[in-house]
Length: 109
Length: 113
Image (cartoon, rainbow over all chains, first blue to last red):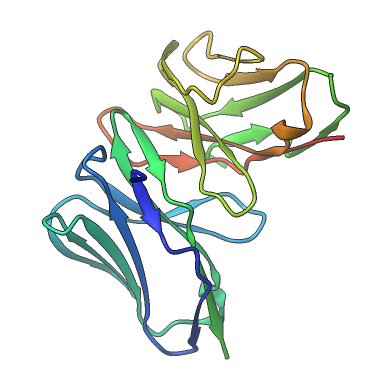
């Protein structure tokens, strides 16, 4: 099993809908998790971090962590075309971040 | 701009040549990471420094790759005898003491022809 796994997508949602992005992780990854947004040709940008079980909200973004099931999710409410990007899930492993392959999100008008 | 800075942004080189990239981390961030990213993949860890000490190197980092951070500030990544398979985006990130999140620079896109 890979340390961090994501469905590569694309995930297509209409403008204004909720986009739900998921990520699972192995025992080799610790309990700190991050979501990065990456536009095509650009570098990853940190948008959310979550350290404890439950939900964490920041504006239109909600990160959810379920340690029992070993998954992390990111919800984007009121999706906008500008949210179209690849979303990378990362977990912390022995002093470094380990990334999934990313999920491409497409928000269509 | 006080973010992570990488130079050059783009590099095209012929196979067999050596290339060197530079990364200036966010001021006072003591951890510095190098990652490599190819199309359709997430960033892959290469190596990291805490201050000037290189604490971990990935098995991906062959002996053609070397990284330094001589004074605990900027870092360089050198690739010797480049191969076409080295074509990728090379990303640098930094992290403050005690934190787990990392902040990325703009990346250096390497194309080996």
